[in-house]
Image 1 (tube, rainbow, N blue to C red):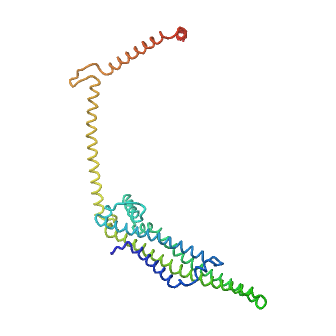
Image 2 (tube, one colour):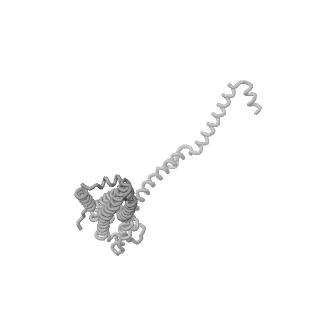
Length: 328
């Protein structure tokens, strides 16, 4: 399968350039922009605003799909080297990374892995945005038809005023004819803008993005089926592989426990020697006085010092303070 991660962006740019060249060729000498400035219904402004929103949204979505395609190519190379376990999750901002992370999480919990459903869920946001752009294109067509009806209404209103002023009010006749011509312009230009911008340009942008999302889906599915299926498909080899991994992990934990026990054994031996030393015994069972005798003697000595300090401090107090302490 030939990987072309920049195909969606290239098609988008080609179609946008073609549309721009066609517009400059066909509508350069028309009074389209002059009509937009003086459109009494302002519906053409709404059409242009929605079209700009659709173009910006489609371009941002095209960039996102292109980034996903580039990331999918990198993941394909990693899976080719070591399967699902060789894939390194860089960031959950990519749908491709979230997809493989979901597969790994499912396998860790011993669940059933439905890669098709997982991939559809991760790519659903891109499909919804592409569908929204297509809906905007349909909405532009509808607005063009509404503008046509409004333009015809203005035309009939202007013609009615002209007929009423025919023969007695020349100025009112000309004003009615101008209103009628403005209405005809509204009818034709809104239909043209709605059909071209919505029915042709935006729908084509939506189709390009939709094809890009489908290509991304096929690329990720191929990676799973070719390089990762042995890691998530229930089989005897997969069970043996998982058992070997668990045995290696258990062996590592046993080695770590042996190291911990060895260090604990040394600490306990040192602690036992320290207790013997504090109790005043040597290896032969003879030594100085035990530790509790020394502690009791130290306590007695501290109490004696405290009493002497108190007596020394009391002799330096004035007679009335000593008298008050005596009657306490």
